[in-house]
Every structure is written in C-alpha cells, then in structure tokens.
Figure (cartoon, rainbow, N blue to C red):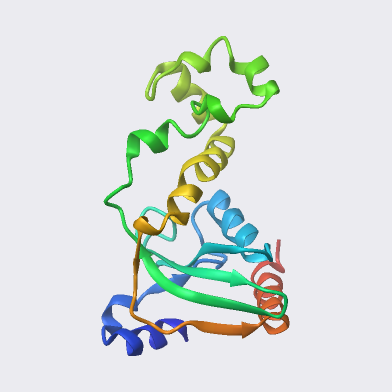
Length: 187
C-alpha cells in the first residue's frame, strides 16, 4: 500500500494514515474526480497528478499528495511525490477563475454573459445566482483556470524525500483500467 511505503520512506507513518486514493469513487466533487481521471489517462509529457487526498474531506480542500509523473513510450515514472502547499493559494484568485475569468471565455460565453457577468466581482448577487445554477460549470472552470496551473508549479509543492517509482507503461495502464472498471462498474 502506498501510504505504508511513504511512511517507511519518510520515517513518519502517522502523516499518511487515513489518506484516500485520489482516483477513488468516494470523492465529494465529480469535477475533481473527472479532473484526476483526465490526468491519469493522458499519456504524454510531465505533470503533477493528485494520488492521495485527505480521507476526512475527500476533496481538494485539504491534504493533496501529488506525483510528478513522466510518461514515456514504455514507462510511467513518479519522479517525485509531494504535498500541495497552500502558502501561495489565493482564494480571491480562485473565485475569479471560474465564470469571472473572462480571459478564458469562448465566443459563446461572451454572447451569453458579456453584458452581465463580464463586469461582476466575486460575491455580486448575479455572480452568486449564476454559480448556484451552474455549479458544475463553475467548478470545471476553476479547476482548469486556477487549480491545475497551481498544482503544476513546483513552488506550490513540498517534495518528500522518497525515491522515484517507475512502472512499465502497459502495467500502469492495466492498473488504471482495473481501478476505473472496479470503482465505476455500478454507474
């Protein structure tokens, strides 16, 4: 089990007790679950992928352990494992990264919201009403525009002193497919 291995490697097993696999079925928010599966299934480049979450909250609001993952033609390597740091997290920036993030708007967004939401501030009544009616869309936008870029910047991760883990790519893909089918077969 990964939490046991991390505890042995760091000499602090208590830190990892109760952490839950980030790809697990019990995550509180569908948009966070979809984001993690999207990262797990992409097979190119290097990216930080959430692998363990706080078991009490089962969302991104608490502890997130990430693996800096490198995909190559025949292997997948967790080069580093670390914890998301919150020192640079800015709630105001996160709030503005959803529907208020006009820099990422499509032409359809401008047509639908340009005369109303484009000029809103966080906590304006029209903004509150929009996110209440469109929470899934708001959450997806926040992940795409704030959370994902935040998790990819090295200054936002406290890397742990653990060795890299390399998996044969075919076994990694088989494991991901197994988890997906085992966890989601009742959907």
